[in-house]
Length: 143
Image (tube, rainbow, N blue to C red):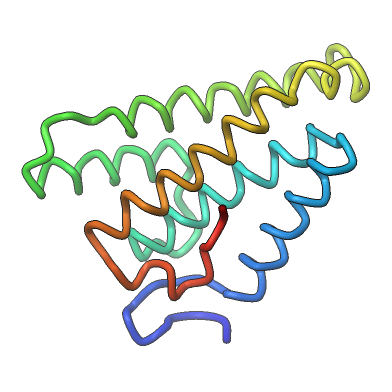
């Protein structure tokens, strides 16, 4: 069931479900690098689905489009925009640390970031459902 759903979201439910399961398994086996990167991919996929974007935009572009959408809805408090920006900066630091410090050293310090990424994903799903109750139909059900 890839592609556009009836509500216009561009997402592949199978990919979302598989990535959510893989992120949980990675966390359970203490593979926090993989867990964090999968959580980042899930947040990006969620934004793409919500904004109906094709996949050619950078994460920063999605954050900007999301901020524009919030302002168009009369939302003056853009906390999630800032959180997403910081989340993406953290991902960039993780990538930097992988080539600078290696996998094991990077993995050792990522468990709290991985838990926070899961929390952010769950909160973002709940928040986006206030604007689009059908967003959960795209497969995002992370709890």
